[in-house]
Image (tube, rainbow, N blue to C red):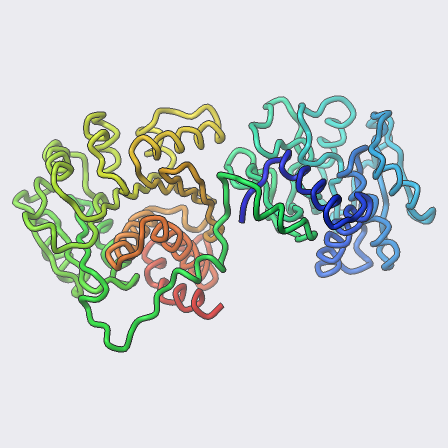
Length: 503
C-alpha cells in the first residue's frame, strides 16, 4: 500500500472528482459515510458525540458526519471555533445542511468551552486535516489543549489536528493527542514514525473509493507491507522435499555470558524452516548449544570466550547470520574483516556485528552487496551518526542503503525496511510486549533461515519482519504483553506461519 503525501492526497481527490466524475461535496459525503459506518460499529446511539470542526474540508467531513449520525438517531453536538473568515466551500455547504436540531456551539474564546466533557463521551477531532502547513496557535491551540485535557475518547478524523503528515511537526505546535485516528484511503507517513506516531493512537484506514487508476500510477518511495503481499511469499513444501531442499544456514555468535542470544537465534532459524543449521560459538558455548538446540550442528571456535575466526568452508552454506551475543573483541573484528574479503553466500548482520561495523569505517566499505542489516535505532545511529528527527533518519537510511547496496531493517514499532533502490517498507505486525531483550536475535534467526531457503533479499525482509511481529502478536494474545519474553516468539512462530497461510 503506497503512502501518499498531503499534496498527492489532494491530487488523488482532484483526479477522482474529474474522472469518476463526482462532485467534491459528494466525495466528502462518501468520506463521512465511511467514518459514520465505523463509529456505528463501535458505539450506540446513547453515546454522547462531540464534534469539533475547523473551517476547512476536515471540518466539512465532521459536519457531514454529524448530520448522518443525527439522522441515525445519535446524540450529536457540534463545536465551531470561529477564527477564520474564509471557510471552504464544502464546509459552508455542509454547515448549511446541518439539521437545526443539532446543538451548535460557536467558540469565540476559550470561555465558550464546556468545563469538562463526560468521560463516556466520544470527541471527534475535525479541526484540521493533512494540509496544515504552520503551527496551530491562538484559539485553535487553546481548543487543542482543552481536548487533550479531557478524559473522553478522542477520535481524529483523517489525522490529529496540528500534526504534519509528511514533515516534522514544529515543536511549538499544539497537536491533538488522539486515542484513535480514522484516516481516509491511505495512512500518513507521520503515523509510522515514533515522534509523531504518539499523537495518532490506534489508526484505521477507511476506503473512500479514490480512483484506482491514480493510486496505481502515483509514485511513492513509502509503502506499507500488507497481509495479501506477504501471503504470496509463503512457499509450499513438495511431497518429495528433503532437508537439503531447504538450505543450510550458518549462525555465528555467542560469547561468555551471552550464549542465550545465539541459542534463541538458532531456535528461530529452525522454526522458520531451514533444512540444516550449523552454529559456530566459542568453546565455552559447545555444551550449551548441543543441549539447548539438539537439532543444530555445532562448530567451536579456537578461542574459549569469543569468536576469533570463521569456518574455512563457507560455500556449503546458503546464508550466514552473524552477531547475536558476539561481543566486540578485536579478534572478532579482524575475523569479520577477513570474512568480507572472501566470496560469500548472503549475509545477515545484527547486534555486535553491527557495532563492529560502526567502529570501523573501512570495514563498512567492504560490506558485501545485498547484505541484510537489522539495527535498532541506537545501533543505526552508530552506523550513520545521529538524526535530527525521524524524517532525517529516513534520509540517512536511504543514503546508507544506496551507498552500501544493502537492505536495512530498522527495528521499531513500525519496523522500516530500507532498500538499495531507495524504497521504504513499513511493517504493521508486532506490539509493545516485544520491547524486551532477545527479540532481535529471534529476528536474525528467522531472516537467516528464510534467506538460506532461497528467498530473495527483499522477500526475506518482508516475510521475516511480518512473521516476527505476528508471532509476537500471537504470543501477546496468549501470554499478555507485559509477560512476553523473546523465546515466546519462536515458540509461537509455527502458529504465525499457520495463521498467515490460513488467511
